[in-house]
Image (cartoon, rainbow, N blue to C red):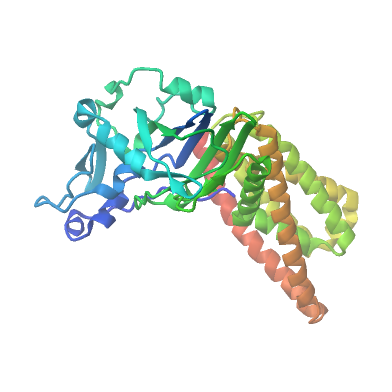
Length: 427
């Protein structure tokens, strides 16, 4: 699914600001980079955790009381000002130059690591702050180690960088009596940011037995239990694949229309197979970057997906189209459409998995399996619902077919217009 804009900040008048509580004011922090990455390195006597997260996660909930000027007291390491009547937050470079210990403390206190149910205290070995776009690579353990080798510079913050455009890297050291074989990671931070529940948390565990990748969504209040079982990492990405297709309305509508247009079970299975083969191919190709890189390409794919919904909706209500082309031709067309949807899946996968990440093929296959399971759920539920309607008689089934297809086509037509405009805007 290609969601609508995720970081919409609602402006408030200054008069209203003076009447609102601190929690409401904190919503003005923007979460421009909604990803948290943790590399966990196993040592003989504990763990090193290399963490990267958006700065708003550490400070947004710490705004003070409203002052006489109608603005809240700034959170640590930040400053407040009004821009066109909106409250914005910038990085206070003077505080950072003086000491980053307070920010390091916030980062340490925000992460809980437990072994056998007991919280292990961490020490902060290093903390770096970057303006988004200037931070070093952080995809692998070597990248994370290298990120802490350089000398911190705050020169890029001289122009008043927004807090939402700032990333923090922290190296935490957890000392234990011996090697760690299982642990749980969680966060107690609740900054009150827009779409914070959609935060992508990526945990990469590096132990002598290999590398595992775990994925969690949201604030990470529920502990992620990390073990040395590769199965756990696979299950995580299977869940992500299922969630993606079920939350992706455009993919759901396409599969529903696919089921709607199949007269019998055998043709349906062949069409689903063609769609599966198609999107499996381009999911991998798109993920590894074998596609155009222009800004127009993503909205073009989105528009194509919307057009594919209209196509299968028309086929569902005009059976003659299937009969004229033949079943194999319809399967071939469905496969070609699957190529288009696979690109859409790949764009989402790129947000939660990087090409240079360890266990890349296991994670990729697991995500694809998850997509297939989600697709199968839609097929079963839609097919059963249409079967129940069919029990009411041929007339009821026909009305249902036209109604469902029309609704799907109208929604898709709206997307074609909206997404087509995005293509023109990016040419």
